[in-house]
Image 1: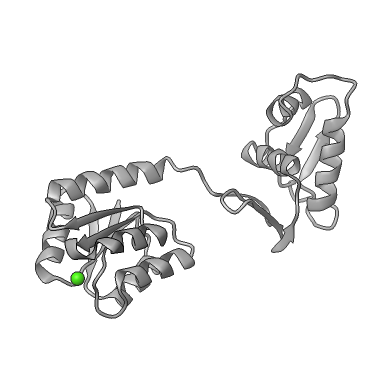
Image 2 (image 1 turned 45 degrees about the vertical axis):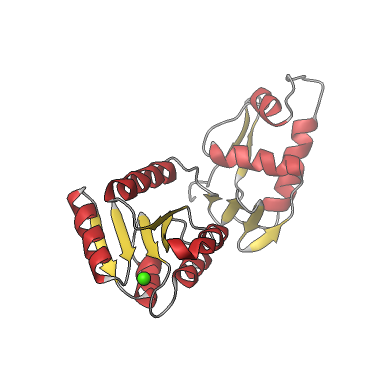
Length: 226
Ligand code: CA
């Protein structure tokens, strides 16, 4: 587990680096907001400990740019007691937790471990197959970078197919998961929904991702090259 510390106060920085290293983490320490931003965006960190008052860029700016750069690792904000509004601002900008200075190292370590545990169990936010992407957070689907509008049911159906990519999903399973109904062989609601979904995500693109297995169900997978 790799942690980045961005803290300009010499003593606090050294103390954090030493403590976290002894706790078994790989730790990088920088003392400037700009360096912190660059490392956070380019390095492979599992967590960032970020001070608010920093030379170069302040902690909020660093945090904002980390998130704009698409990095989702947890960020633990360090804030002074007299900057308590920072806390609110930091959380709004996407900080995951904060600690008010001065703090006990044991408290910081506990927060770090909780954040790392939480982020490890996080669901992936992006489901993909070839150039098809489904963004769970923004509820957005694109294929080859092109935005595709889906109804709520179509979105749920595509999400299910992507989550169980390569697996043949029987109609009865799709019916129970998406329509919350028992499979009734008289209904063609699933066939219709699959057809509409295909028209949106497969018809104008290659390779075709959704396949029908007659009598068995549907599968979404990247076809083997011929
Ligand atoms: Ca500082």
